[in-house]
Image 1 (cartoon, rainbow, N blue to C red):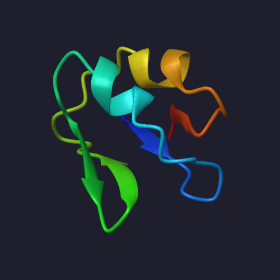
Image 2 (tube, rainbow, N blue to C red):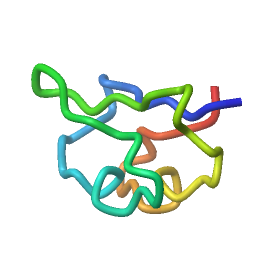
Image 3 (cartoon, one colour):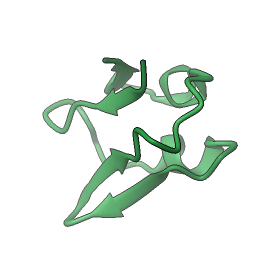
Image 4 (spheres, helix red, strand yellow):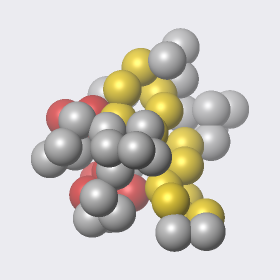
Length: 57
């Protein structure tokens, strides 16, 4: 199950994108989004998000 970013919680700090080992997180229209097809479900985004916006779907 891929991870997702809750745009209501996200503070656009970029920690998830900066730490993603497979570079599957992109900034689109001011929000960070995860490419579910490229996500390897490692949980790094969730572990590095300071506000808990990234989580498993």
